[in-house]
Image 1 (tube, rainbow, N blue to C red):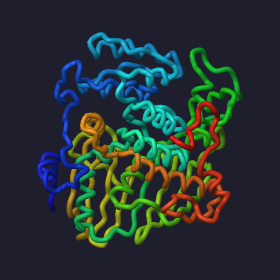
Image 2 (image 1 turned 30 degrees about the vertical axis):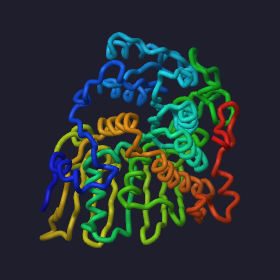
Image 3 (image 1 turned 180 degrees about the vertical axis):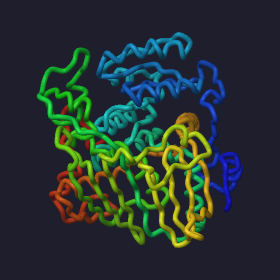
Length: 454
């Protein structure tokens, strides 16, 4: 059995990896980045600072070569976080604004970091590109198929670096897995299974009401259709169609992007999805049980979702950051690739990968393997280096768009009762199905609209 650790892989990657992986700086600690003079620091605006947004802001600051000039959040109660950021950048307190367009008008801001709800991802990125800013935007890239086309157009037209927050593409262990497959060591891969299984409770239906003090509800609602404030819209948006696409979009976008990258595919020929909201009734509109199937040339890719399975476990921090593999049969976010020469099981966000051969004496036979680490630091490094050298990042906007298309095609099929969709790869549109094309693009609410001409 051959084994690769991170150092061995990085040394080998200098000559063996595809161009997209060569030159990555592997950082054991964010603070190990070269210390730049104050006038060389990358000036950022943090857009959306609740939860993941705060983590991203802190992570970029810990590098030592970035500065947060703005905190932008429609909820002004989040502005207190500026006081926590100031000590991390020499006492310089970020400006606080509810409308991030004010930050876009500031020429000193080089890039924005967008961690908004899903329905704002594309618009924040397009506006950022139009303002001449580079963009780090959280996954999933888009809320609809059409949005992704506009994001790519804007990034290319304004020559902007747009990195999607799918960190797995910056992970050395995943780059090694991709090369392993490209080199034919797994044989021909004709089947890929993607899993997203967890325990996420539904919420009871709640009446409309008044938004909490400090919240600009009109802007939070943004590109979505006009709606009165509802606490479930505000706090449970991942499971409401107008704001997201359910957990296939919210969480599984990581695995779907990684699987598509590992398999080396772009547009599916067909897409199909079925399922339902079975475990509990309440505010959620999106499914708690979902199966999707995408047919590519000589490859079938499947996806399975459950949201009532507490015995399925996401890879925990100890496994993510050590030489340890998950318990694969109960790993909630694994990917299985079936090749003619072996089965590869891959973990996202650390967890590593193993290749299994035929059992011997009823015991597993591990043919090859590599441990993994959580690649958050690596992904930020990739983005900042691309801001400096103007190269395309590991999770370029086009890749984010292509992966989001799989999610949207599946959800369109699901929402139409499990219709099998035929995809035209040239236009990315759904052939011969006006009803499905009705879900290809949303109706925007001015002024929160992506223009036809970006």
